[in-house]
Length: 523
Image (cartoon, rainbow, N blue to C red):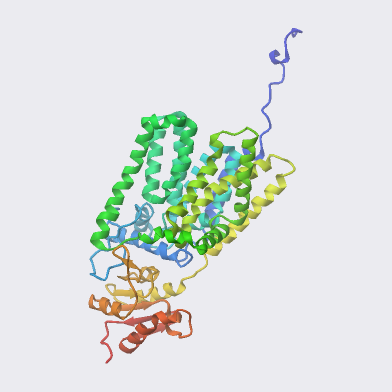
């Protein structure tokens, strides 16, 4: 018999207290995350066997050169080599400076050795890095805003147009974003527990991030907010704070000195250019229009842009209600740090539009937080679901537009040269884009830069100079403009066109022209 004074909480027969009902996202979290990653992987398999002739073909092909040459010339990550040469000499190897550490092309070379040099093989590592990045992004956001915010934000990031597209392009982007998300994840966990293993995990992730892309150093802004939240002003008295900064910076500084200060002066070849620091662009209205248009259409995505702006206001409103801490403003700090890249590297952000994809993660975090809040209110739930569906569908559609071929002429021209010239033929291409030379699979020249800033101009003097160096072929993947006097930009070809037509035999097909310099010039 139960004592009348005994409360229900002391009654062994009383019904045990039940957990509060969990949200749909929380109940099915693991399954939803697995499905999300599968969906992200399938999206990135689109056109995976196609040659690199789409949106970022110029940057992808030169990185693919590194992978190909690692396999052929020796697996030495400190000797990244391209097929380009300077107009000073035809060196045995095209060791190139001003590069990121080859975290993508180096393992791709190992995959080439296993599976052969196929286009799909060059996309395996970027895809794996992209999926790993989504996992770390999810883990970090879950610590900040819970499972619902994490799932929604990760879905938005997985279909963010540039993150989707560059998640299978042979470039460093998917790796460095994975490293940046891992940095935030491990750094946040270390600040909370101060465990030594997490400290070293954060150091390694942060060092890899800087070696992969130095401009990701702007991640110091959200990291500073996390540090201030944990230690306040005492962070400047903590030895761990300085040790972390030192261990993170040393590998990057060492590689920077090697790549920029040792390789470039000796070989004259460089990925880097002072053009990324064109601060004069900050005074032009076209700079801001171009940046805004890129952010709206592909760097972030229209729906996410709107939701993230509203999300900024929601956080401020919650602050007004007194329910927030400094940590709540992490997305704002992240967005601020990402925006700083526009000021630090205006030229790079203007020309290399993929620099702007750094804005997508904090924007997706803000949008995800807003939608997660709406999912918790019955009146707003269906509207939030509709907004999420629109953002997902539009993001995938915008990304797939980036997969459309834009440089088929370079592919056709390069393949024709590869099939119809000797393996040791030297090739001059008339454009800045290295895609033609990549598809030629030949050593030669492109009309870009050498010796860190010296511009190579396609003209008669250049043709004569490379002819002296042993050039066999001039490949012009811009044949329609080259041969058509009414085409825009034809005037840049006019003087050299007459010289080539009068002196050398040519082969013409749709979209390209090839001249043979090894023939006896006409008189």
